[in-house]
Length: 323
Ligand code: SD4
Image (cartoon, rainbow, N blue to C red; front, side, top):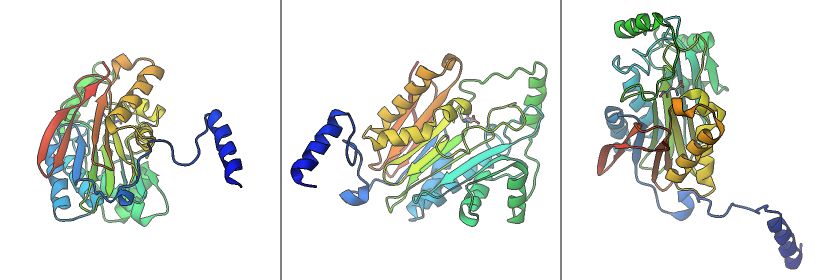
């Protein structure tokens, strides 16, 4: 096509509002720009010990993927964290069911949902990614896969979680609580010394949910999304609301279009508050980390905190909120 014809064609497309090529302001992969992002660990809620665990891996020059897996495993094993792994609150039948997913810098991902009796769903999710042609295994099949791969079956219902369930049964009223405690589902993003990003997300889901309910946390694009060219995002809060807006994918795609991580999180929250009725009664929070190492954090209701670890920073900070 001659230059003149190309120019006219582009002008026509422009007049129609159709952009040609990379969108204006879209982020370039750091490898094209030469500046590596700073090694970083970012996670939902007050999870500094998990960040420290992940940071150890990063400091040694390990993969971001190993860092996020190791980091969230700490929370999965903690009986005092009642929203994740061992010690998580059960569903309304008194059964602990777990959801988790993981995604690496090449876009590989693995996930398990409705998994029972296995303490570390994140490691099962990683094996799904690495050992199978699939992305997601559910329930009995996920359990079978875990057992075949050496995971041990164990009772995940702690006395405290059983007590909370007994208490809940007196009224049997399911009401998503806004900020349950100062720790909750853990979503973690990390950038390694090599500049590459990975993420993980793991939860026991909404307390006293219907048996069989699966939330956003094991769904790639809802609870977690990573694109090494752009950055990553994780979500916490009411999973149904996050799924309806493909929350983490939305945040990453907004960053791809040129939004800063903070603006991307704000727009994703705005999308929920504009389109979903009843947001006054539920919480959703997003974290984002882009390829320059910039961080965003925003939620519907005040009270969502996150942990940020870097060479010179090790802090819990409060996310801005819509309300
Ligand atoms: C879920 N998103 O299963 C999870 C729960 C959560 O803060 O993140 N709570 O809906």
